[in-house]
Length: 428
Ligand code: LLP
Image (cartoon, rainbow, N blue to C red; front, side):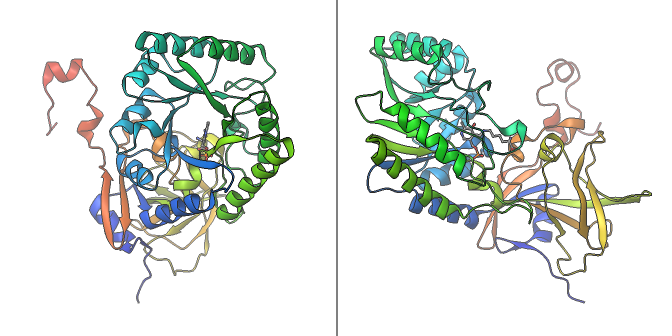
């Protein structure tokens, strides 16, 4: 009997698992490139210039950042670490935007030293520090104000960032905002570049975005010169059949038209419109391959245990996020079993998928979960000293190893005392 095996980028999942072991993050490079092209083609206006910056928290690897830079996108980074990785890629420094609500003095200092030209200011205390550094280095810095427009995109509570008591940003009407504008007016090295707002993630309905655009455009009336308007990220993706995201190209066109209309109505001009997609750029391009281990039948449930779990995909345990899966080496087998896919971490909540339909599986079968390309690897952890899987990009039948799988030795990499005292014994 021939068995149908899942192929990603022209390579069989079984071959990928053999070569790179499981768990394994696999990215379909063509998918990413198509999405990049859609963003670039559709986020355009005849009335203002546009810039797309990739929210690299979704997934950072130099190989990907180089690809993103090639398509002309910029980059959103939120820590010194993300900034450092960005500087090691081909991303031009002047396309890096430094976000974050608590950037330290050290991180901001590095931003100046490493030639970052855009900082998104999250609060007034931060702006004071940026102002002092700009004066010290006698270096201009473009500042975007992160405004909290008080609009919530209807998504899961944990990933809503713009409600009024949010730790991010400040309200236009607030004392905090007035103080920021004063600081900007009185420091010749600080240049107000524009305003920014991010209303949430996994957005399926553009109306919340439209409401935020209306507000932001109203705020822009207060300025004499055209500024940059950055409307954040948040395009929803399909995790399971229950998710019905909007067509990306159509959403981009609709957003552009809406901004054009709002600007015309309120008689405001902008110098540039920006968006910062993360999940939508890489989420659906990524899958995770696992090997099925033991199985267990309880009175209510049939468990398939896999060789990863919340250490490589934290989203189900953290957000009750839902995923779809298949047995990758028998794609055509009838799905007769109602299964709970559980990880191997020592934690009852380490369930990757509750109640999905799968074929009868055997030990050694490959299980694939889809849409793990965003916030999968980037939120991975070494709970229970599970090694972090490799990341491969596959295109035209060729698999390119982008991040290697950790080894047990890597798990001791940061141990100082024991390693010095005993030396590392490979053969235990
Ligand atoms: N811009 C800002 C200021 C953001 O805070 C975020 C995401 C983005 C852009 C990109 O949003 P996206 O297009 O990826 O939705 N760990 C969560 C998501 C946290 C999102 C945080 N901010 C998850 O796994 O769902």
